[in-house]
Length: 142
Image (cartoon, rainbow, N blue to C red):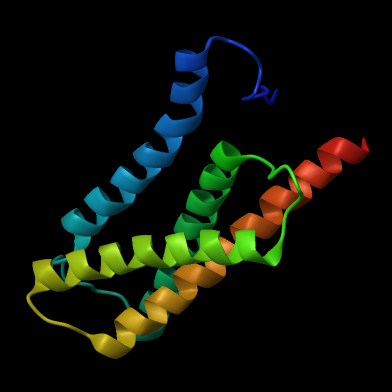
């Protein structure tokens, strides 16, 4: 698999589209999937359901954070804890939107489940940030 450089000069509009469309596309996909699956009865064991939900939430927000980080790039002064906090706060806001959508569609709030999901979302985002930064580090040390 050949990775292309998203920062290659291909024209400002094309470059912006190649960076931003995946971010918004992934977010739309998350919200559409949430809307379609919110009221479907679950027929698997509760423990397996939780494992599935943890994997889905962590993966979804890891990908979202990595896509956002790809757009943002590297801050001129270097990456700081403040940058990480801001990105995690943005992922938390996206997760709050998803949990709000689920609550509206189900017409019922499962507070403990929603808080747990938000924790998994932010944890997944943290993994996405770490993985993206590791890839960038590997790319620059090769």
